[in-house]
Image 1 (cartoon, rainbow, N blue to C red):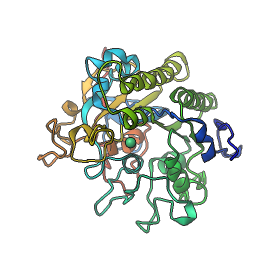
Image 2: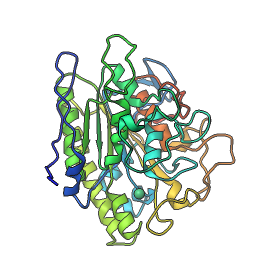
Image 3: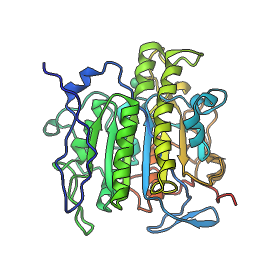
Image 4: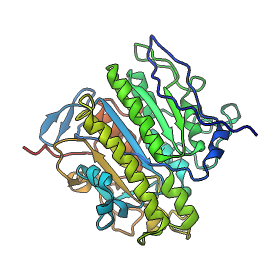
Length: 395
Ligand SMILES: [Zn+2]
């Protein structure tokens, strides 16, 4: 087998100039036995009522963001953003200057990777009348063999990529596991939906797809994509998936003791996140214009080196962080969402309250809200974009 180094892409597409999309071949991943994936950070800074153009934060009217990054850190336990561990994680510490909770929940029925990421980008849960129905966690079959999100439901499942791309934003998917090719197959030029909103930006909703194993390389790719778009006066929505904590968790356990492999993995993803934050904070064109939403697909540790049991608190408890860059007031997300969300007890998978917990599935529509864009068609989680994500800026 010939193994070639992955070719990364950060050229951008617009209507006038459409460079060919280069994708990393699956074989290339064999080069990297210890792939690292970092998950997402999304930053958001406003709170909102659903509106096509404005975002209302608390009592103040604020701007939308030009760039929103959804970061999913695969297998990230919430302790990473809590004392005492957070003291070792300067980037997570910075992100936690926004609105956040360590008591968010993954999908109520399933605590594995791919279905939970489908939740994030579609604003749907796996099960139920409006569920997306994708419960598989393996590399998907090819597009023509059923490897799209649309085939099983029998209708098109819209995503955050549809809304962002149809609005003229540049979009990128930067991941650490090949199984995410499911998104490229579902929203690429062959299976993506028509753009009914003029101007027509086409069916290929993901401008840039990168599968790379190392967190820092991913961070650099992502930063370059956003900077390049910004230089061209383009707005962006990007999705970053960081895989390292999950890889390490499966190999050595979700061990939080000092010096463990998992703790080392957390340091690695924090460094990658720090590189992204530095890029944002050091760029006059990006500072104050980028929001990050960071969450996880699941935690981990039950059974021992897995996270398959959806009833285990260490598996279903995840962080959810919204960072807006400047002048944020650190705040617990639940305390500013008492009318729409209810914080479950630490060991509760569901809340007995009629209000839902904050879930990773809230992320897609939260990102769109930060961009000043409407919710994902057909979504059910945060479909009213009513997840408040900030308090008025400090004077
Ligand atoms: Zn896993």
